Amino acid sequence: LSVPVPYNRSIYTEHHTINSFGSSFSQQKKSISTNMDGIQEALARFVKLLDSNDVAGAQKTLTELKIKMIALNALMPGTHLTEASKAELQIAREVYEQAIRLNMMTQDIAAFERHFAHLKPLYFDFP
Image (cartoon, rainbow, N blue to C red; front, side, top):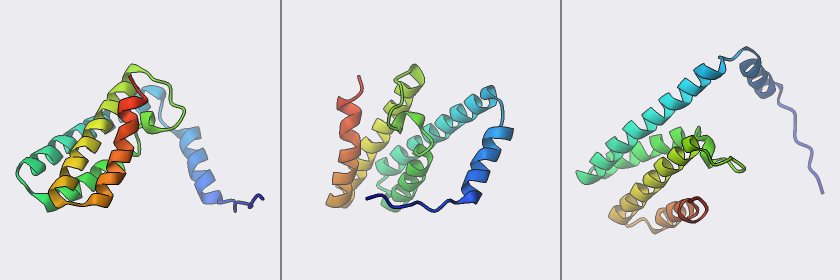
């Protein structure tokens, strides 16, 4: 049984516009690098907040990290393993490890299980 998906022209047009008039490959590569830098900075801030037992600040920073991680190509299904994607996977692994640390501090079992489910493939599916 297939369900028709409504066509959303605004999303298509926006995506098409970005692809047609977007920046060159080198600018896109620079943007990806900048995103990785932003994630690394947020991760360092997250670890400091955990070390100082600032749970509220750590939770806010974790949310920020998760949003930034959406842009990581290595976390998309079917991505080829390259040096850049290995670095992205290592960052994602570190984020989820620290998220589990936060979950242990707050004794949030459900979040612990979710983060562990995200972390497990990063250990076993990638060398």
